[in-house]
Each structure stands twice: as C-alpha cells, then as structure tokens.
Length: 163
Image (tube, rainbow, N blue to C red; front, side, top):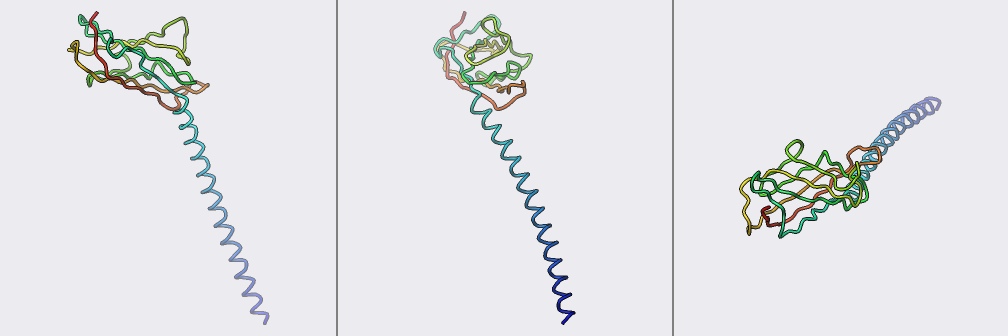
C-alpha cells in the first residue's frame, strides 16, 4: 500500500512538471502573438493616417519639352507628416526617386505636414500632347519621432501641356 502512494506521488509530481512546462510555453507563444498584433496594428494605423494625392489637373500636367521635365504636385491629405526623402514617382513607365527628382515644399514650411503640397519635377523623355499617360507617386508616412510608418500612394491618368 505504501508503494502505491509513492508511485501516485511520483505521477502527481511528473504531471505538475509537465503542466508547468506546457503553461510556460503557452505564455511565451501568447506573448509573442500579442507583440506581433501590436506591431501589425501600428503598421495599419500608419497606413490609415498616411495619404497623398496627386492634385494636378489631369488634362494639363506641366511638361518642359526642352529638358523633358514633368511636374507633379503632391498634397498631403493624411493626418501625419510625410517623407519628402522617400518620394518615388513614375510616368509612362519611367520611375524616379532620390537624386533623380527635384522636390520643393510649397510655402514656407520645413516639413511636409497635413495639407501641405510639394512640387516634384522629374525627367520623362518623349512625351507628346493629346496622349493619355499613367503616373503614380508614393512615399512614407512619418511617426511623431520621424521614423517611417506606413505608406501613401496615388495614381493618375493624365495628358501633358508643353511649356
């Protein structure tokens, strides 16, 4: 009889050890899952708050034929600052960014805040009047600390007007 009590106690202790290990594993998995959900939620929030709109008149996009420069005007229609350094634009299948574009913030500001407009000039050769072209612009939203959070993009079907 004493042997039965000892063997039952050994099984009980083994069951406690196994259940503790399972519980710790579950806690770790749930913690990792919660962190991932928090990260994904911050990305979605960044996507929802970051918006850019190409505000050119689609029938009158400025094009300087002498140097093949096309001009897009981009308005921050979101609720957070947008990155002027991360702007990428494309027209007629020609994508440009970084040092291949000229970005000027309209007005007297130093940051591209909500409601502000930037002028983006980039080279796109061989465009002709009275032809429909497609274009797009993309950039990153910024957190209050200035780090990228989310992205913003817009597209346009347009015609040029030579200047």
